[in-house]
Length: 570
Image (cartoon, rainbow, N blue to C red; front, side):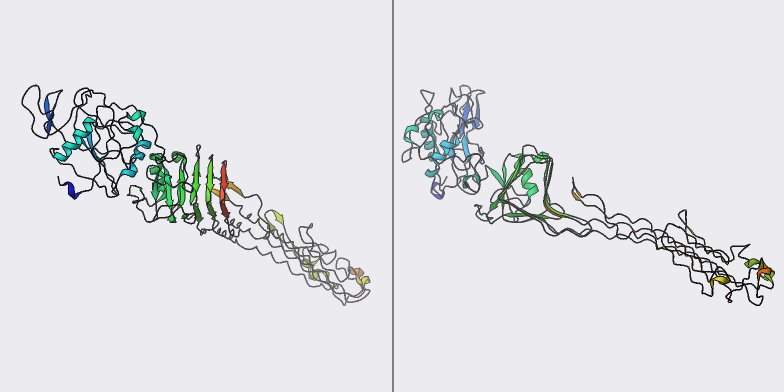
């Protein structure tokens, strides 16, 4: 091994040995087996099965738990302190690294029996590991281990580690901690503090690290491991990874397209925004923007709760008829918290118009009035004898849904009839020229026009809009009922003789004082009323613009902004 070509640092805590005669390892140590021949250089004799085994192997430590430094004991020390662990049998050498990969490698020497010649590796608590962090040079790098460890330099390190003697030139960890068991080492006054579990990125930068969270950036990729150097690209991927490892989500500024749903399987999610994408330091102006159509952010059925800090949610303008624009929907959830966040809704879409239906049906035409009959020959027009046959001016007959809307019946003797239905205004008969010669000369008049049916075109919608599981539901316009029927027209007025005093009744010819004039004609029958048109369908409700919809939920807002714009017309 060329030691001058690499920068390395080896730090081994001098643990008090439980073995009064610790074994000093060198290239020839433990090569002799009780039975059989000695092992080759680079091998050792396993005292159990009396077989030779390679002395060198590599073990990778948990880089998330101890990303900076590890304190290893190479003596026969059975660790009892928190954080202590065994690593694949026993080991005696650690090569430390501060490169981007942070690969920890250990040269192990096998064996499991601490009472003989094996050596276990113990890892101290994080607070003790942090004590020696400042002793690492910035250029410390990883070193690939050889297949065997017959290099003299490695022998020296192993001998020092096994004996517990301080290596020449090395720095002590802390004065009181040298040559002390791991579980009794005191705290160092100037040791770096461990980051509190509840530390917030906005106030404590120590929490913005891989041991505490996964990272997401618009420039990331969902196939990445979710670190600062290789973040995820979507909130969906980041939230799933965070819940699987019980970590937070750290999101840097930028726009993230896509809907985000936090349901009961993701209960306990915490999302922190406001981070710079380059330095991953807190910046209140660097809010990540969750943007999508429909509802960009939905929280559904969480109990423990979810927390969002320094995020911005923007809903697209609605485009489908009657669709609402809602930024966030929370339903059946507890402990939902938004801190320094913004919820912005877009414009609701207008509802679709109602459809038209066929117009009204025309009424039937009334019958024409009959001409006057000569008094000298009453039998000349028997079909027009209004006294005996009152239908000589027939009315127009029509029915609308069972309602008769016929016109008034005419007559040359009695007063002409009214149009039906009688309760509607209009449809009165015309005024006759006179019931007899005694009334003087006058002129008949037309019957009055029947009254219009009821107009339902302007009937407003009824009911109340409501919040539903999908957000918002407006009230559509009421479909128009069928228009009311028109009243039948009144019958035309009947005629009279042209003399002032003459009477001329065909059925009583002897009453005719002047047979040179004709009997009066009858008025025309009234036209039947028209039927009302079919009602049009009601117009659709317009979409709403809502920043936050909360249904059966507990939502807490702190220093946050909610904004909505225009709703769509119905």
